[in-house]
Image 1 (cartoon, rainbow, N blue to C red):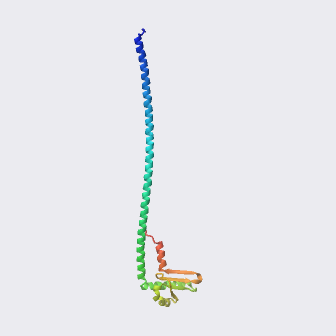
Image 2 (cartoon, helix red, strand yellow; image 1 turned 120 degrees about the vertical axis):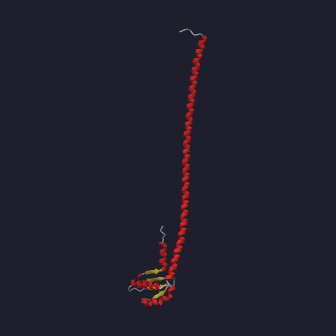
Image 3 (cartoon, rainbow, N blue to C red; image 1 turned 45 degrees about the vertical axis):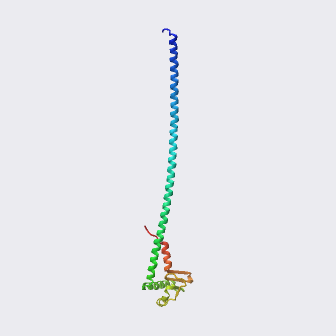
Length: 193
């Protein structure tokens, strides 16, 4: 190998230094780029997690709001149904009371009273029984007493027709009044859909 001149040595030294510096520069840029990419990826991941949490929270809020609105809607539907049910129930029982009033003006009603009295008397057997009719049926008292061979009394309290009987010795009340029958019907009445 030939001896290098000073200028060549300097050039060789400069090439080595420049190459070494260039390698260090490239390594530093590469390390910095990798670091920045790592920070960027961490930031993206954190942003994705934060977005997922916000989406989940928003879905939950929307679900709660939807359930609340649904519940309020159901309550309003129930109220509306209840109002309509009461209105229709009132109409049904008003019509029923009108029909009972018309029925009480027929001979079939007289026959019903007579049948109730005979059944109550048979139930009492030899026990003393007091049979009551509604004050509105006062004019039927004597005829019913004759037909049933029973002492018929007019009640002090109206009960919309029918009869009531008391067997005091057995502490029994037989209630065949229309008032009681209507109350029972109203309690048990339901519209079927």
